[in-house]
Length: 316
Length: 322
Image (cartoon, rainbow over the protein chains, first blue to last red):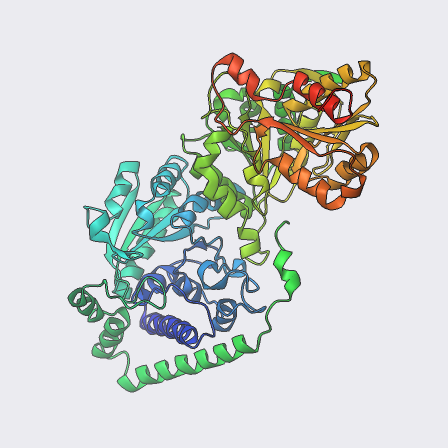
């Protein structure tokens, strides 16, 4: 990444954080339904998505806002979706948890943990059979890696040489249960070796490191047309579902990870290296806030769908 | 007309549709092993064996269907669909709606079921009603080789996920199949025999029991109309209602268990829309609320028999005391 791209990555991470904080605030005011956020995982989304080309596709999960925004989604249409409005990406039928935007190549999200892992093999099969050199990135968590579908998906992708970048955002939490309680190994990625698949782990709070690792993985997939598993080790700074008091979270652990907030790290590094002034960083934050205010206003001005939408788009 | 078995009719439909549209492909456990003819004609990318993992087979089909291919997957036996319920129900059935119509899922899931092979309840379970109850899916369960061929072709051409069930007892039954395309549209029942005293509504193997019963009833002076639903969803309400209004007596016959089965839906439909035309209660002849047994005599006793149909109709029309 050159300096401009690194500043842009910081801006994207700020945008994602501001978006999720807006959704949380809207919910607190009963203007939107509760949601699952990925606060603290912004570097994973931005680092990986920025390494993809426009022709590549993305499958994601219930913590998808970062992936969508990093891909260039309009926060106004996203908020409209969260608020159940007609101008949402899915016409208000998805809400925050299952947002897909075909026009951006963000296809087939699933909130069934592991659902995206069972769909991605088919999307990649289409890519490999219908031509083009596009690849498919599939975001899932350490929780999904406990599902049987994780293994079924990796095995089939390896056997069929499917061009998939599996991205495990290991955020240490599986809903309300810490990863330590459900798996003995600290890392998910080495399991890929059992399926003959290359893998790597990376510090998921360092956006430069994530981007570099993703670039290498994407290049390998384009060259070999074989799948790759990249584990992005990060931390979910907020609860499973908003609202959530996080009473089950060890405060020391949370404090340690807060000190490694990916936005803070990227900002401090850019300032320390002389690529960004503190004032410029503040102005970026202010611009993101203004953008989010406009997005919320757009969303609230959007009408609710008509009741006929209850039964439209059930069948093609 | 040509004579072929149900198995051959299915193979012919697959070959014709794969020839017509190169987006059609088939995969599943043993598909490439068993379908050497398709493998030879269409090549390994379009005729694939898979690991023994129904969930990822169905999920791969859904993902491929949403992004430009038209997959047919063979999941072998209907109870195995339990391993693929998430992909079929939550993904293929819902993601079109949940995405506001951004995606379509043109895919077909093949599975066998029903008594006849003595394979027991984890290979034989008529689960078709589960999928009828799930939004976004279509369900087909034919009874003749001609319909197997024509309906499978329609299912492959449909833009929606279609569950296509083969009754094991019919797999090797020969029958007349028209030459050429002969696509049978989804959602249209067939009136196989006209009658005025009673309507027998059925699908799959039980259709043949109904036709035999109609023959025996005719000898007793009772004219039974026989309807083969062919497609369970969308349900051809019009054909059922028209016949019920004519005969005033309806018996629904299927091998699947009784409670919340297709028969219950049809009885409710008739109560809501044809109550004034009914001259007798709608009867359901079904399998019991029990897993399917392996023992051959028990397995045969599971499905409604011709004797039971004849006796039930006799009571309904007042030939014998209720």
